Image (cartoon, rainbow, N blue to C red; front, top):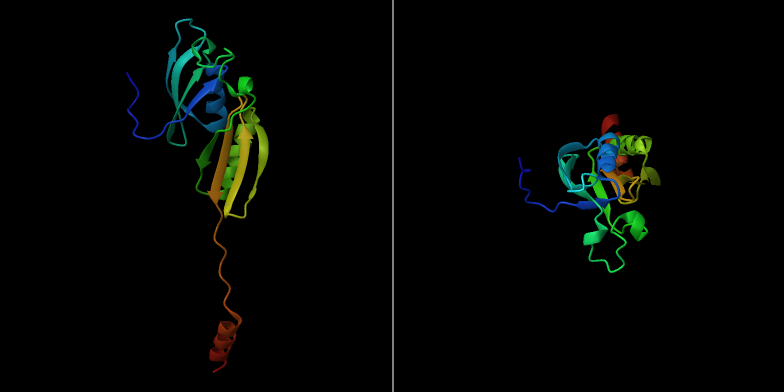
Length: 162
């Protein structure tokens, strides 16, 4: 049965071990496997779909023999010396950032930026998965309560005295 048609931009990851990547994403990022399609060689995955945090992600093993890369070296982050693209997972609460990062690290991801409260108002952190893909986690910090202005405080105290 084909996967449901998506009307969105769907990231498509190239990895060195599709089956291993799916296992990592299940354990480290709470992914749900939707489908996988083995390649003709029965060793690699031609295509797979997982869902992370309610969103589709496609992936496949590297097929350097079909790469438009003139070096024939393949297109995984390991072979390219990293990836300039990161996957961002928007979370609801700051404590979730730490939870997601801890789970990913326990499953084998490398913490490349520990979670911390950022000046732009989010708790934010980054891990790199065992296949070289960067995963960023963020959640809005609670808005600080506004303190009453000094004149307003004095006025309120004066009213209480009356």
